Image (cartoon, rainbow, N blue to C red; front, side):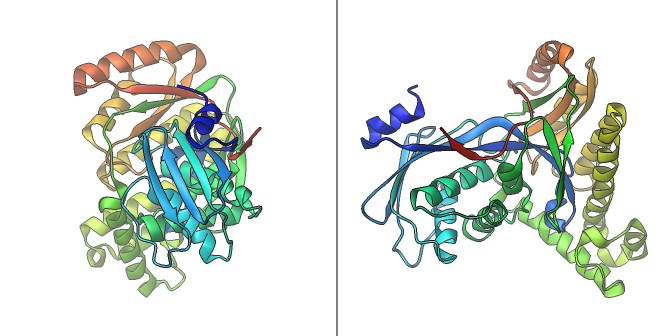
Length: 381
């Protein structure tokens, strides 16, 4: 495959500018972001790349190198409609920018993503943030990084139709090399957490794909909001599940109903685990960090019910390998990936054993990626 700039010249006959935004893996803190809670993501080396050059009209020609498809968008169309295609992520960002008074110039865009789609590694936020940076730069406009993260989240919520929290877009914008981020999703204050030099992030892709906008993800969010409303009747300071305690939950268990009770229990205990995990990382206690990862996976499997047999197999296989500190599913769930903290010297043995074990147990191959924590989005010179 030709380099992106060469492919762009062949396709559009222009010299482009190039922007990238990383995918992300979440070490711990799943489904807490849209409950105003705490998360601990890290940007990864797999990224989405967007090449762009201007046009004289107010149209966007968007070509996906991965899918070999082109979509066209008229920026002057007053009633933009989503198409339920990959291009919705780019169009949604363009629409959101225009609605905020950012008049965009027409552009040709060529997109290549290394982040597997539907893997739980935030391919959607990567394309949104990279496209947002590219569209702004092409139009001679600027937007503060935090506002860009919020705008991209809004595009996914309102245009694409997935009610995600802000973690993915925030990580794409603010990721730091060799660090995870401890992020408060209410205040958006964050603290970089150095990752130990002797540990690798090993991502195992189950090959099972999800479609989060299709229902289950939005249903989980609605269940959490229903639980928070019940708890707020008795404690008005409960604005979201982040404000609730296990005591609050137990006192109102019968009114919540069993399903909503378990959804809320996951979120409340997961928030506590994130803060405990940050303390463990600060003192270099990877064994405790790994134990918390395991508890997180169990809660996601049993209380939140977003795991699947393939993810459970990968976590179980990882737990049997030498040099593994912790393993859990990562991302929205219903398929996708696991994240594993593995000693550098054991990564190759881990890769071979888990690949073989997963093929025997699940009847399919697992793609395994090894990544450093990476920097956030920007222009590539």
